[in-house]
Image 1 (cartoon, rainbow, N blue to C red):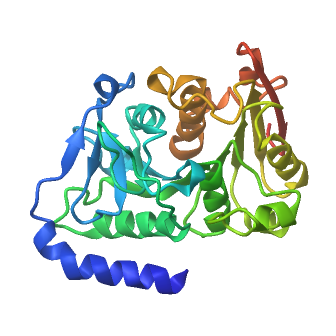
Image 2 (image 1 turned 90 degrees about the horizontal axis):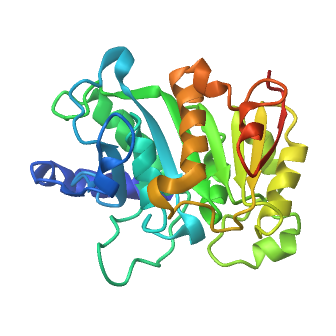
Length: 298
């Protein structure tokens, strides 16, 4: 992984300086989302291997108002977030910088189905940290690099779990995913991170699992993860939507509402948003269709 990341950074150094003067490609998704900061999906020339979702106007985001960072791994470990644009854009519209693995989805036609590696999540963090320090960057002092979440869906959830031990990470969100209870089956799946349950010990942050109920192919794996995580706060929410979640629904559906509340709580310190996950019973248990459980949380 380290070799891959070094190669990536050398590539960026080689192409970056002339490319930084280029105008980024961008597109508006669902009129910018429902949050107070109209969002865009875009590609930065200095990070052509990833897709950004962020408020279109970032002028006000500085100092204590800097944008918390969320890095995202896609379903099937695809090298493009085309399955999750509504969901990711909606989160960004609430004042976050979201960087997804892979190239920006096309508006029409065939989407990218090549696979990616977990190291791209760390590449995104490296890039954001460097941009935040670069006086020539539009992101100079506009990214809250003290509050970083790693997240992902299905195979991308395994990617998030693989890098969750990075000390820069503040929170972990695992969607429709979990480490395989049967390692033989897990190891037989091409391109998936080859993890076993000992990986869970590397988690050092509050963790959210979003699962699609018993019909979700990852349900048993995810619930077993939660059962085994006893050293950090962990919350699991289930709604009967299966493995596909609600990502493609308008504005990302219920998953986007719950994930945004989690990020507002964990990355921005919003205690009101945290009420969805705290208390007995937690607020989310009162939402139609949701069942929840938690450990090491108030």
